[in-house]
Figure 1 (spheres, protein in one colour):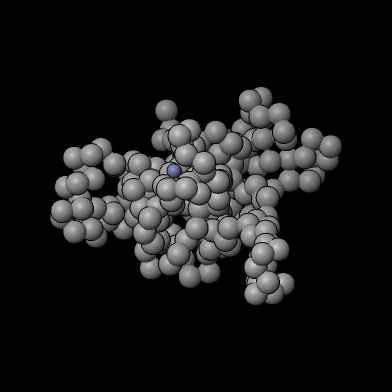
Figure 2: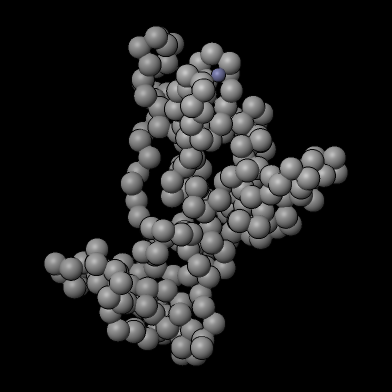
Length: 213
Ligand SMILES: [Zn+2]
């Protein structure tokens, strides 16, 4: 398939949205899957595991694994975040909401978190604040220079130049009646509801291929 020699396993009964078959290499390593329409078996697409979770999710080659994010931060910030336990991507991001820095994980590409902004005190949080009058807003990305693609271990990944990841980061903008300066050319298209990840991405980020048992 796609010019590759692969073996197709039996249909995986866990998936009901389509007929899903895992694909295996000659060494019986799981390398991808084929997803066939239930109405028309000939209507199918093939998804391959890539070297990184970002590459698998976006079905892109060329994502590069770098160092962990801590090595690019000043030591006092590292100490503070570790001491406070802000070491998961979500806890890290929560601390960044007042500044331009952002971290994005593969699962956030699938479902981007919203920010709750208090209209009274200006407090920003990834979770609703019951004591504040907060308004839910899409997460913004003030600058790509301080945007880091990370996995759950805070390892940083660099996208290939042609990556479509940037399209997924555009917040859905609603035309605002109070903002007359915004012309129609600045109203961005809604995020496409594409599903390019393997089916298990419904509940978790794509997993790397399992070693043969
Ligand atoms: Zn408040």
